[in-house]
Structures are given as C-alpha cells and as structure tokens.
Length: 378
Image (cartoon, rainbow, N blue to C red; front, side):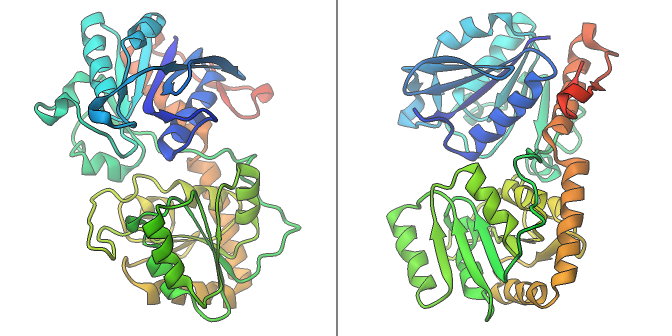
C-alpha cells in the first residue's frame, strides 16, 4: 500500500511554519515506518527529498485561490498521485482537497480527509463534499461533533500524537513556580486572561511565533509590571526544555475573545497540552472545544471555565502550593500521552480506516518490532 499525504498549507523555504503542516509531517513520518509513504506540499521552491523513510515532494509555482497562501493548487499534483493506493488530505475546505477527492471518485482511489482547522474557498461553498471522501479522520471527538459527523459510519477519530522521545521529562531539572503558554498569539487563545490571572509568586513565559504588531503591543501592555517573559522562534529542543522546567502548561483558549470575535473551533486538539504533558508538566485548559478530551481534570491537571482569569490564577496558585501533587499530575499526564497520544497509535488508527477501504489489505495485522522503537510496522 502506497500512502500519499497532501497538505495544502504553505511550506516555507526553511520548512514547516504552522500547526497543520506539523501534524501532517509528523503523521507521515511515523506512517513511513509502517508503509511506503509520500508527503506532498506546496512552497516557494520545488523539493524532492527523503526524511528517513518518508519521501517529501514540494510543488512550487502553485496558483493561490483568491490570493490566499493557505489555499494553493497545482495541476502537477495529479501526476505525483498516480502511484497512490490511498490519499490522505489535510484540510477539507480547500480547492486541492476537493479536487483530489473528485479525482479519487473518478479513478476509484480511496481518499480520506482530516480537518486541521483553517481553510479557504472551494466547491464546498456551494455543495457538500463530505460524501466525496472515503472517510473522515478527525483529530478529536469535538472535531467530529462540530462537523456534524457524529452519526457517519465513515467518520473516525484518530487523535493526534507526540514524539515522546523528543518531548520527555528530565528528572534532574527542578520546576519553579512558573507557568508556560505555547502557541500562536491570536485573540481566541485567551492569553490576556492568563496574563490577568497570574497569581503572586508565579511567573509566566509566553512562547511562540511573533504576533502581529497590534496583538504584540496589546499583550505587552497587559504584561507591563508583571513577571511575564516573551520568547519567540524556539526550536523543539529549546521548547522541550521550557516544558521540562515549568510548573504547568496552560492553554486558555476561548470561544469569545476579548476583542469580541467569536469562533466555534478555537482548538481541534490542543497539541501544546500534549507536548507539555509528555514532559511531565501538569496542564491547565479551559472547558472549550477538544481540550477536555486531553486533560483529565484533577488527574493530569485542571479544566477551568473560559474567560475566567481568577479560575486560572486559583489553579496555578494551588499547583505552586502543592508541589508533590503537581509532580504526581505530571507523571499521570505523561502516562496518558503514552497510552493514547503517540504517533504510532495515530498510525494504527489511520491504517485501520485505510484497510477497510482497500480490500487486499483487509485482515493484515499491524505488529510491533523492537527495531522500530515501538513504531508500527506491517
């Protein structure tokens, strides 16, 4: 079985630049240890390279639908897909995915789709394309629900994963009373609530790409005079070190932001919660979207009401005052990640869905091989 992943989100000249690209790349890399896998993306320059077992093809010179960089399309895509047994698209509501789904129906190739948030204009603005795909592989129960797929037999939940070797604890590092936020600084992330809720004696590090100038100025005004540090452009090694020495990772996303904007899908998974938990950091999240599926309240951290700085502050103060309980929560968080949120487990769930669509693969079991360090092989 040759599996091709297609991610229309923009790939920059120096590699991946956002969460959708990262999810697709990490899943494809793990899948390449199980079956022949190629990842197709779009970027400023054409590339054909090998990342371990994974082949990566980047198409340059794409047409950007209505000028949107996150909605590229290139006719050469179909030539690259000619050897595919299964195609897995990432982002449903973009022209590339709907075109590949139509191609799949014409050629008899099974095409699956995962919605990773975002999107752009495509034919689904006028007619539903849900039935064009052989299956919908959602990254959370909330994603399946918000897309009204609860009763669809072809809608499955594959969750998301963490590289638990890259994101792992360091028992020799102490955890001072310091909270950590990791992510893009956008209104729906609720970072203003986190800044407002920081209790006495607790510091806050905000890590992520540099925000738009207006958002940057707004957050720095809120943080003035408070123990808040902004860090940008951290690589995975530096980010893991931040997770390892924080009291708690916090993701305070909201449906309604302080500027009045609203969204139904502020989080489809909560990747930074998983990364922090893999490093044995307790997690605090809001009762919003998919995040309560990740954080087990009272066991791996706390789930608090959205738009409530006082609730965030109270939980941070409790963790700072109860270091032994905080460490126990951190250990429970890593065990939860190992049980449910590793890339090999996501691969298993995907392969189960693919097998149902490819008759000659029905009944072929996945097995674990010691040489693959727990990765799935067939």
